[in-house]
Image: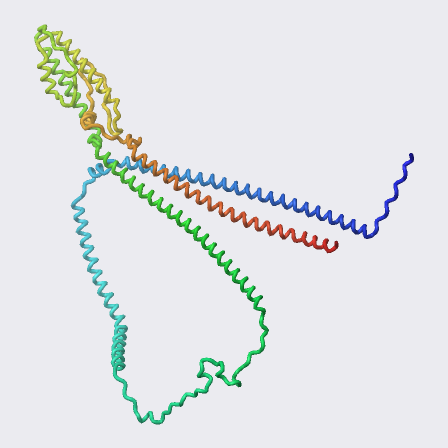
Length: 501
């Protein structure tokens, strides 16, 4: 089949062409408006995202800065407290040493007191002379004022006396020609109200005035009253809100002030308790802490010499005894006990009573007894060396002992006195924190200080967040104004195309 040719499309009329053009323009305008709105929406989203990122970045920087400052402050406070603590420990006993070396010069003090008294006497005389001259000058400058005041007082008294006199009686001759006029009752000024009392010639009639509609005025008055009531309610609501905010802020401020005052009071109590404990520790310190070290060495040397003399005398006496084979009593630990109560004389007496007239067996038994005595002393010295002593007190260094020479080392007088007086509190125990209640209180105080600092930092961060929120609101308002300004030309184009349609 043959395909028929397509029928020619009829030509559009001018009105149809104009209609088609208008529809195309309207479609393109709508598409353009939609594109502009999408673009503005994307721009707004990007601005909000940038603002949020900048806000988060500033908050992070602020938190890092505040944390760094807090760590620095905490480190400085700890260093200052440690320094004060070390200084206070070093100052223990300083007053005793200074009082021992510094003796007052009574002659110089009496001479200084006499000189001060003479200077005070001279200053007193000079002050009296200056006071007298100043009073004389003031009297010379004030005599005119005093004279004027005195004259005014006399004049006031005279005027009061004249005013108190009775008034003179009137002269009847002078009052003959005086005639009082009768009041005119017809005058307009004599009436309180002018209605129906003024003549028609004196009345000004009011011109006809167009009166407004009372219903409209009533509606306007009702609207005005409603606006006033709404404004009053809004003002009251704002006042209540501001009062609530002020009350909350004042309450928070009062709580912070009370917490700080309570914290300061607790710190003061802790300081007093620490001072009392330090005084008690200083009071319980033994006398050995205040003795010089050379006294300890001298005492050690004296004890060694006495023990050597005792051993040498006992050995000589044993050599002089007769050689009689008699059994000796076995020695026990009580005979070998060495303490401060036993003296060299007592040891010699006991040695004389326990010895008998024997020969070489006696010498051998004495050597075994001395060996056991040396072992006993060595064990006691090791036990004493294991104890913890204060850093200011020393220990007797152990030395080599021999039976032939008889040289022995005895614990120093310092250790003996420490064993007699009982245990003393050392500075290491104080520095190591053996006083648990005071350290716990100090830890609790530090914790409260840290909580108060954290609370203050939170308040600062909240204020900063409020400031950022206000800035964000202002930026949003500016953005909205810019959007309105950008939409104004589009509205004008829309109106223009609507008129064309």
